[in-house]
Amino acid sequence: KGTAYVTDLGMCGPIHGILGVEPDVVIEKFLTQLPTRFSVAKGPSILTGVVITLKNDGTAEGIVRLNFEKFS
Image (cartoon, rainbow, N blue to C red):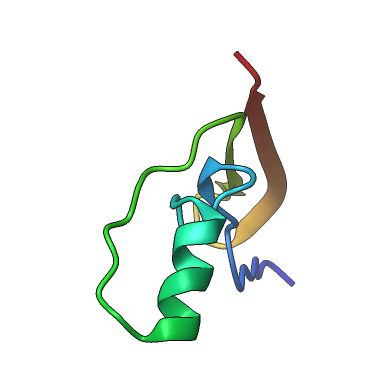
């Protein structure tokens, strides 16, 4: 029917982080409700998204999921 629908593209950042932050720090802040200095999560990263191919009339012809992982 020419419609492509995406609810959530995914994420860009450390796989084992919470919104890019070390999980222990986020959990501490949640439990204590105190100001906490966030530190960027380390480790493998991921970048996800989609590519939507459109026809000349603007309707969707195809949709492809992208998933790039970097482990070094």
